[in-house]
Image 1 (cartoon, rainbow, N blue to C red):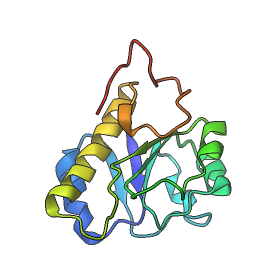
Image 2 (image 1 turned 30 degrees about the vertical axis):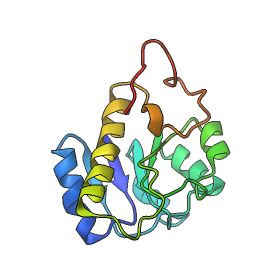
Image 3 (image 1 turned 90 degrees about the vertical axis):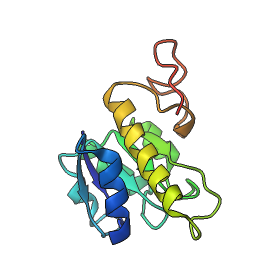
Length: 152
């Protein structure tokens, strides 16, 4: 799957590369997601975002027009994402993971976030639900179906 990760810090690259093992074509950029930078997602199916990224309705609409189907967030919460706009645009969201604070993350925590991010991409690519990571409206085509009882 072609993916773009916004707001990537230099130390995060190693964790994502180790987790990915060249399965997905991931573009890593340090720019934050916003109306001006959403264009970088052209040709991709998924975006990886963090708390500092603008994932408001206008940005989601632009991402949907560019072909984005999935959003993975590594932020502590999901308040920065307009989930209603994502549902209208048929974009699924995974929240990886729900740490209460990201200021004191250990190396193990950072690798777990990267591993779970890649696992979500793997599941979506296989047309499966991301299970407990799912933060969409739970009415998506994957969630809670007998064919896709996957939990991560």
